[in-house]
Figure 1 (cartoon, rainbow, N blue to C red):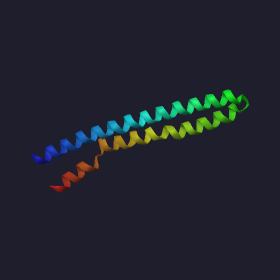
Figure 2 (figure 1 turned 30 degrees about the vertical axis):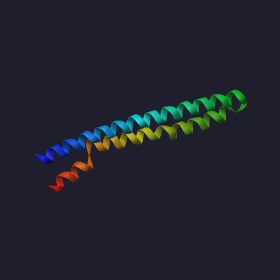
Figure 3 (figure 1 turned 120 degrees about the horizontal axis):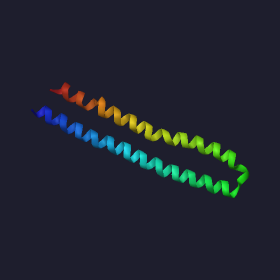
Length: 93
């Protein structure tokens, strides 16, 4: 009976951790995209002849910035569906 409550505790904390991973990753990426877009518009307004170069660099950085929440979602899915902590509990007892 004790093992069942331990598994339930681990799963509840895992769901909280997954929610934090996805939520904070999305929040950080949203702030990053806002800063990136703002600086791009500032640079384009100051020097319109460099807009093409700035746009290319902006899309490269946006692609790199978008990788962060994707990695967070992958880790969250790993924790939810293939939780290594539950395997340690079942091997324990």
